[in-house]
Image (cartoon, rainbow over all chains, first blue to last red; front, side, top):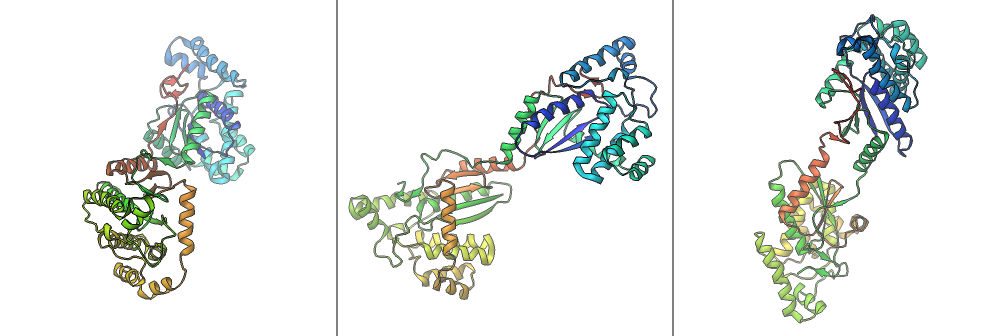
Length: 235
Length: 235
């Protein structure tokens, strides 16, 4: 089985939803591949940050820094329920294009396992350590720490490589009708929208498993069918 | 799409069910392959016939020739409703092993199209013309008429070739829990038992088509999901 997940690296519900999914996967008895896809929530965010997320939210929705900080604290509380201690109140509003390009490089270099390692490292850096994940030094450290080739990381960061892959992922999400993230697609067939509870992910996994392993399903009643058997024909 | 059909060449409901399925297929807009599988209803029937079907039925179920003939006339009436004029009251009780072996040869030689042509020729010969389809001259004529290579037909008839394939088909039917025929399996997944009405075949075809061409199916409510979108995160 396979789960394709659209997600942004600065999206709090994406990280929380990842933990809830992982809880369901831990109890699921069959192997499942996870592939990460790019979804930029705020493509207009600056490459060089000027504001914290809290400041930006307070300005965008009104109420100033204090109001923005309250919003951040609510997702920090939800994260704590999943066992994560965040410093999201210190996180900066940054562009995620380069982070997403490296997530594509990771898959190309080392498959879904390497991609998964980098995705987790980026989320952890941004939410738990308030790192600036638009900064190339930070990105280089995280990517090579996850196992990517330093020379390739530098090449990609210095170019626009994988920008088209980021764009293609966004197009695919739009084709699926996904306006927000996280957005999960199991076996190209079952969609889960949002950071749903682990129990719902468990149900979706079971449903996809059953769909992929059908038992012969009778159509129509066999009782009054006209048929012939070893003891003769229905006449 | 593909339909696997277990059927005997001397089974009246198999021929009637074939016509009903064909009616549904004529209105079905997608291509469907049909594969025929062997199911011997009466493996103890003689290679050289001694009785008509009517006589045999009358002896087996009581009431003599007249009662047997009444049974035959009832399926002849059902066949007439599908546009077929039968002489089944003259049909002989015969063994179908050799006919089934040639049906397997047909597939090996010319694929499912040739197999389908021979299957129809055998059913027509037995039901509409009361031909003795255990007789090797009759079988040779029907098989070569359908397009099989005469030399291969003679080789197979003179040997036990494809006897194992006939047996394997019967085993597969038993594994599916099919005790009688006709028995239809669509895409290895949906089962139809007996000569069901054309409308039911149509429904089964639609169901199989939908199963093979899924649209993304939402799991759980998206309404109160915790997610982030272009306008911010649910906080």
